Image (cartoon, rainbow, N blue to C red; front, side, top):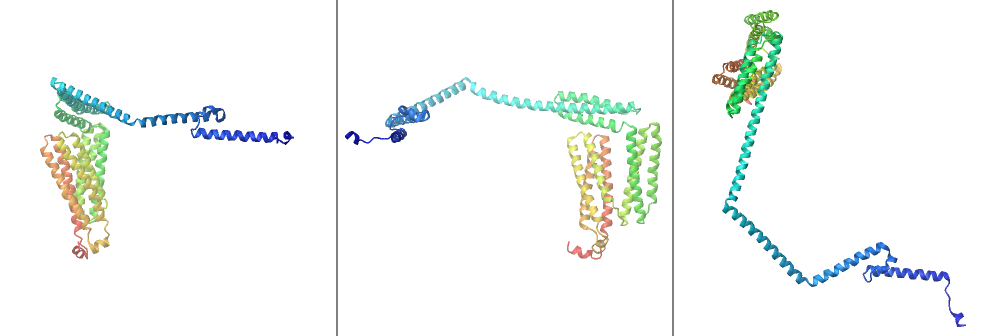
Length: 450
């Protein structure tokens, strides 16, 4: 009866109880492992390999923590050890410094220390001197190469013209002189006489330049000279026509220009025979006469109050021509100071040409009505007047350079450009004078407020 009174669990209930017990057991075990109460090793079959590794790491951390706690307990000993170690390090450092000091002192006593520094300084100075010498040698090599190329190019052009039938006797003689100076240049560079080498280099450039530009005469160059002369004659005729239209006298100018045309005709007659040298000479003379006639016609035109719409363009063209000629002269000039002086004048002339051209245009564009009531453009005319003074100073500087030069060719070239600037100044002054004569109906009133 008692046995019958006992309660029996069904299989399903027993299974639920077993699963619940296993879950409680696993959860409790995991909690205890995480809190460090027990080791995870015996329960690896429950937690798996990953949890086992994590638990082992935690155990290691715990052991390390325990060791740290033990070390903290013995902190005094560690501090003592640290102090001892610091003292040992200081001793080692002191020992090293003392050893270094003893080494330095021994080197000084033996003379090796000071000599080493002196030798090192001397070595640096020698290296610097060597680099400077190397740079000078490189400059000399480059200069020699450039000069040799210039002479070779000139000689090649001369030979080409000679094969075409051009008389190259004078050109070949001059290029032979350039070769002789080239040998002297090499000797000067080898001897370290760079001042003399620089002078000889400029002499070589000059000889090469004149050998082609002056001594060599051919059909092409003659054609260029002819074209330049014809262009100047055409411009001179146009100025004479303007002067005639304004009521000026043109008889003497027409006669002079006829002489230029005759020279052109004579030069053309020499071309078929191959006498290019004399033909070019005649063309150059014709160009010079035509340019002079043009200037005279313009001066006469402005003197009677006439105007020229092309004057600004003509002046700018003039400034460019003068600047180009001066650049060529600077190329063959020997003295560096003189070269710098010429290039400074070139820069001033270019700037002056642009400024004057702009001022002339403004003065000419002033309307007839404005001129009637207010007179001329005094501001533009004042700017031109200032440039006239600058141009005069440039011409005087060129004349001074010509007088101080020992080279007859350069003297002639510089003087020619000075004369051209002075002639252009006369024309500019005539233009300003003609424009300034017109004060206008109320110009006097404007002057009160200027």
